[in-house]
Image 1: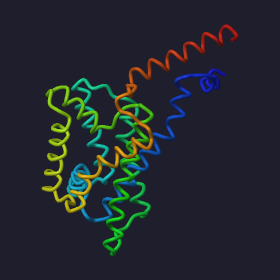
Image 2 (image 1 turned 135 degrees about the vertical axis):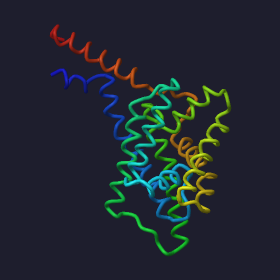
Image 3 (image 1 turned 45 degrees about the horizontal axis):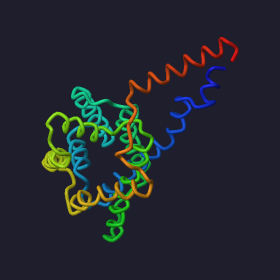
Image 4 (image 1 turned 90 degrees about the vertical axis):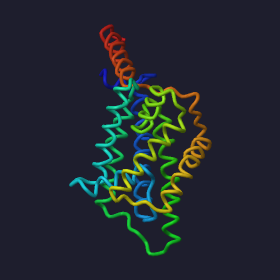
Amino acid sequence: MILLKLFQGDTVFKSLIYKMPWLFLGFILFSIGILLTLYADLGMGPWDVFHKGVSIYLPISLGQVMQITGITLLAISYFLGEPLGIGSFLNMYFIGLFVDIFEALGVFFTPDNIVIRFLMLISGIFAIGWATFFYLKVQLGAGPRDALMVGLVKLTKKPVWLIRGCMELTVLLIGYLLGGPVGIGTVIVALTIGFSVQLAFRIGNYNTNNVKHQNLGELVKALKSDLKNLTQKNSMGG
């Protein structure tokens, strides 16, 4: 009875359930974008160069490398004092999982036609842009990389562009040394991914200045409050 009432009225639980499809749409689109840039075979973005490079030397899948990297970044962010949301943890796990699922299904391949490969690369960039919009719009926490970036900005008092740039260059260099796929596509991704995200934000009317993400502690507290209120109403016959 109480469980049914959680879906009625203006409850945090109901809001959370309604946000999940958008969150997972973002994760699926993000994994598709990553694989489109991978199978375009023109070079990947800095973080994916790193992920692919690491996967060459470890007996684990690309998606699992992404998951391990993600949980490591979240752990560092947590120790830097950056609040994390449920979306941060789901992002860390499910994007890597979906990458492995799509790879196992054999959905993607590298065509011989160079024009089609460039179209795949551009499509991947736009997919990642919209994916970022979908999982951020629900305000359940930023992804591992963004959380770490914010934590480092607060710690060092340096500008965002410098911190993000150093992060990208560091993982790109490590990934390249490990044999990750670097090429013209790497440059294209680096130069256009910001535009892709900004375009999705503009079309979706998402203003980062007016957004406050709900961290995990706040969410748990709100859910407990909902449950307590409904339990009290139920005991009173309300």
